[in-house]
Image (cartoon, rainbow, N blue to C red):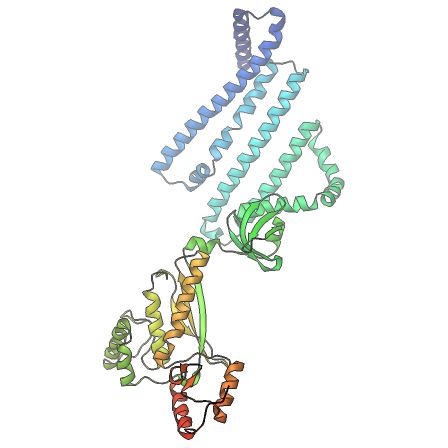
Length: 467
């Protein structure tokens, strides 16, 4: 009754306004209905906006006094705004019969649009509430290890499908139950014709919901020859520009059904891993003598302080080399290999491009037929590819360049030139004091120098081979 009075008052005011403007009486019946429709739409949305402001203000005041997780999640996901969006179609539906005759074309079209908007607003509200419930359940200690997010997503898909069926039934003016009964036979045809589109849609939803891939991410998928930057994500394709500037397009569902590497975590962490090693010759690993330690003190100031600290620990009866409370790096002064590990750790710790907040160590791996692998494990603070490669190359080049100072040498397979030179040396056909203009003592390890000196004495009369 109150609604009827309000509608009649609005209609009367509109007619008086139109008459005052000077619109002819024969056009009045058409114009007042259109203006009435516009007016009730405006009133409905203004009323919903006022209700939203009041509820939001009240919720924030409650949160200032008491932290309620569910209420915070409602505001986070915009559930309050989406819930108040349901108010306008309900008001319009109540006032619409007073604007048009129920059998008129204008009423039928307006009513369908109104209820479709209601269904869309309702499903957005339900999804926001389900997300809120999911966050609340995820924070519960009893349900932390349960796949609650998957259950919430299943409910969202079910409600979305129901809403789509209802919207279609409104458009074709049929009962939703009639659509559901005929949906079984129609589904097979849909799956056959729109298989890729449906799979792409499902894959796109899963990628979006789980934040698996974003535009600008570096992804790697060897089985599809993908190794580059994601440039575009659509319903049916994900476009990737490889680092060789080729473009690869893959269906979104392949990212969900298969496995791939996303390097976003590396970029966001601010560190890119360096993990490289050299194999040391086992017969050159030896104990450190006091004379050798004194010589190595002059090699590096930080290494000298490390050796002195280790010597003080040994004098005090402390022999622990790891988890040292004095904060010393992992290494030993027992062998030249352990001393080298300590030096490389110190070198990495003071390197300006190595992250100090991430794992850093120099370790030995299991011995192989090629020797004892010594591996560097650290993270570059610069994740840019060219810079990372430059930093990695600099460290590995320094690694191998300082090995002779510790009387250590990396394993290297002999090539054809080594075999020829070895044969010429054994036959006494070349002068051992020089090879290709390079002094022999600079390219032979200490043990081989002694052998070379003996061979030189034995073949003092040997003449170089003629060219």
